[in-house]
Image (cartoon, rainbow, N blue to C red):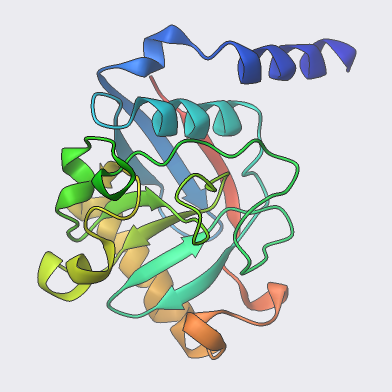
Length: 197
């Protein structure tokens, strides 16, 4: 309907001020699995949290997939086209909120298991919709990620049980470069991502 497209255009221009600070919660529903509860930290990453929330509210993620699994490193997805290139050219890129880009973000300085962060190209301000969830502790993932990617939330132990089940079920299909899953039919499907508060 025309009213829904108007509201999504407005949300892109005027972000919900309530999302620019504090703690918020989202749920990632992957087909065939228990819901994954995500705690979003807008005090550390206000731009990133607002962008993620707006995309979730617009239904952007519904029906997309996770197209990359690097066991012990990350589960990644959330791009129209489910493409490993990792960014949607129709979306406005956001500022990279991490110290390597001159932005203070304590969550991004110490990646651990169950951190959710934005994927990007070599351009620090290129993130659009693609996100990843870390599968390893700081000793195994931190060197590549700390201070270089916009972490914006965390997933609790119960959520990580679900993430690990997805990884276990699909990692054999992740035979491409950097753990990409070649066929969309073999990629775990995101039924929806929605904001709780």
